[in-house]
Image (cartoon, rainbow, N blue to C red; front, side):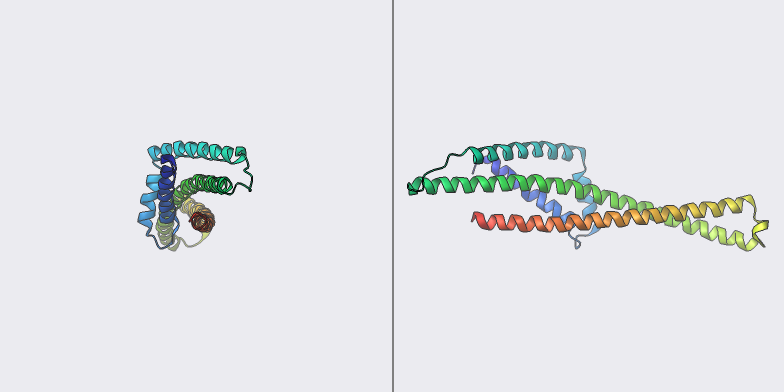
Length: 205
């Protein structure tokens, strides 16, 4: 196997490791945040883009070789066997390069989702603290007021603010749920990709 295919396999192995760290539930959050931060680094992103172009070029070249390969008569057993072996190798190379490009895209999406999820969790925590502090202050002011008619403008403004904060908190919860569902969907896809790679490796042996 040529050097560039060893590069593809090496990068694929690295990307699978990143994808596993980002998707497995057993991995601690601080490790996921670190990996996601690395994968969203500008230099890393540029490297991913260059590699994807490299992978697409290899995939296109391999597919071209597959479809332009001339058939060999089955009567010439040695030549036919050699032809079939080369064709199988080309199919495996196409599968590996295509799979590597796909996993690179999955890692990119997973890292973006992980960063977004943790950003939302931080925002949610801030909103919850604001709501808690404002609720305590509102309760104190309500006790000092005998009825709604005696509420000062400041009290009414505080009630209005609390309603807005609660609305924002609910929107944040909905967004977090969407992110978690997207992450779960990607985790399922990643498992399918891993099984596919395992099957491909078995066929190659």
